[in-house]
Image 1 (cartoon, rainbow, N blue to C red):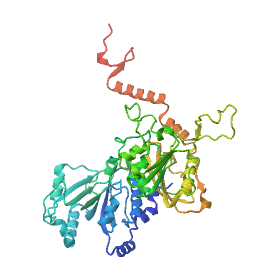
Image 2: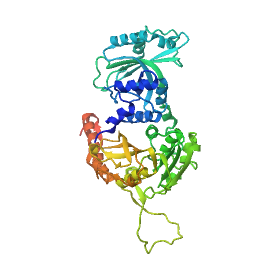
Image 3: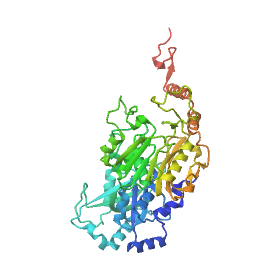
Image 4: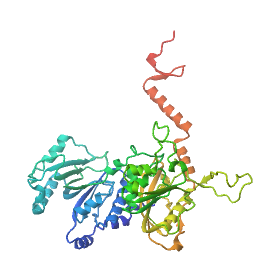
Length: 516
């Protein structure tokens, strides 16, 4: 199975790197494209390309990448129209640390880099003059990747650029112009080269929106559950769902509402559903350490109020997703969800009974329906068929899909005739399991195709059973794991000179009294 992040759609979404395309964009914008550096945080690397492509689509921003583009590098050298386009891109990105306009970069050593930077300044001196004025304070940030520089070494790097014609004062807190100097020393910390692979220099344009990750941190959130989604991933999902202000977004497996919070932070009206009465009403067992009972006001709505999004809350319903409660004319702009996998949260549906038992309660008695397992294959069939019916044309479904690592090459991803898979990113969970964030876009509104679902392989049918079987094969039973740990402890004790005594305790041999 090929990783969708490596498929051609990404190059097309980001803009082709060919000269003909750059020429066409130049005509569109009334000028040539400018070079920028997208500098990423080094986490969730496999999600970068899908998020950037989604944001380019959201803002309708043309962008081109060079032929040797490597998405795993912490920086991308790209071409965009202007600073405004760069700021728009950064204004929603959870992956970007910052964007700076590229003035010079070289992979041929520091001497060549300085020659390139000097030439750029001389060639573009009239255009760059406003940044070097006496009234403009400035700052230079020295950044390295895969190599540590001391403060003294960073200052020495800055002093090698004395030829910068900056006339204003230095301001380390709030500079008018912020320059970035970056040295890239490869991706392998065990094989650091003698000289940097690439050296880059440019003018800072915009920071990413990573401060929002801390703003909605689970540490301070009013209401959380056992499987509340990580804030960064929930915001990434909202970006890949193309969530805009005024959209209507649904999470049919809402849980404690983390994905609703993320969508609401981008201005969408949110509605959720879940089969678990206790979690919807904020009465489930607390998950915070040392918390005995939940506060009376803990709820999904309280979370949205906490972040100033209470006016965007539509409702959260108690519903069995296997039995749709939605009217035929209902339309959603995006569906963003994390279905249960049967590992930490049960996969349940209301049990279907064909006949009434003789011992059943009377009709007027309070009845709590029994549940039965909701098989993973059936759940994703319902999810994709529901999305085909209730998403607007061009709307997106963003959902997680669990897998065993040994199945990565198998053709197991769910498909639907009305939905096109546009992104597929992997998050490893352990040595034997992972989950993939799948993004589908609705491309057809043909009612005859609404039930055209296909799950190519049946290995996910009993995912929970296969997961725990694999866990036992890799790690053994709990008793076997404890025994293995004890054996490791015995070996370490012997190595340190201890010996097991008749009373069962381990002591150093010199502490043992000699026999009389």
